Amino acid sequence: MIKKLTVALLFILMSGVSFAQDDLLNLLNEDLEKETVYTQATFKATRLINGQTIETISKKHLNFWISHRFGSVNSGFLSNFFGLDEARIRLGLEYGLTDQLLIGVGRSSEEKTYDFYTKYKLLRQSNLFPITLSAYGSLAVNTMPTGYVMNSGSEMKFFNNKERLTYTTQALIARKFNDKFSFQLMPTFIHINKVENNLFDNNLFSLGMGGRYKISSRVTFSAEYYYNFVDRDSYQLETGVPYPFHNSLSLGFDIDTGGHVFQLHFTNARGMVERHFIALNTGTWENADIFYGFNISRTFSFDKRRKF
Image (cartoon, rainbow, N blue to C red; front, side, top):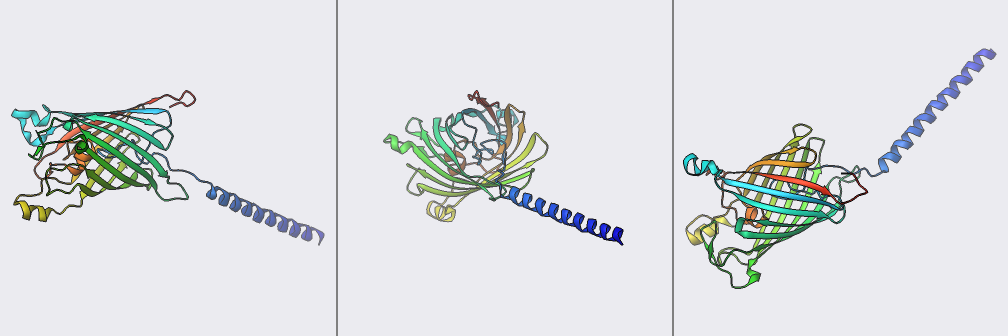
């Protein structure tokens, strides 16, 4: 009888210990769930293809960008070797003032444009919050001589330096769904101080969308599209010709070599500043106005306390 009671008592005690362990594990799991774990590497770089991503760079780090666009592939083999005889280039630098704030500057051969910009990461995706939100703003300065001919065929004349300015504001909203797939929305507002004529609006609203799919540990596929909210029908009724500017669509691959990111892509937009690849893009995929190009990003660290 005593042995039976002893066995029963031990069973009750062991059961109590087991339940206590389960309760303790549940409490620990609840505490871990309350801790904020931020999502890392939603995108490979601060640019998706032509446009920006939500990513910033680390404090006291410097990104050097080389962006290159060849001519259109529909230019033929004999006359232009499918565009390889032509080139547009942009050189840019961006510096991390903090881990969430960067500033940048660039110079593009398209309309001899200088661009100045900043980007700030306002919200970060985590186990407690579903998205990352960054705010982006830029100023582009056209330094072409007055009276030059634009890609659309119009002649552009400037009467003061303010007319040379273009402003861009974007909200960059992204989510990393898993290790392979990330998606981003880019509501965009562009103000051009001087347009070609009074048939064009100085203000342009555009909705960009893009994403990346990870093919391997170092290679990702990227896509980017901007839809512009313009009244094309009214323009054609007024002028008798189609609206000259088109939505931008770009496809490409990112190759991460560790020290830098190498981006290869095809796009119908030859420009590399928002004024050019969103607002004033004259190329279309239907007409094979496709430009092959690449971006190279190299990061340098000026923070001796951190190893890049």
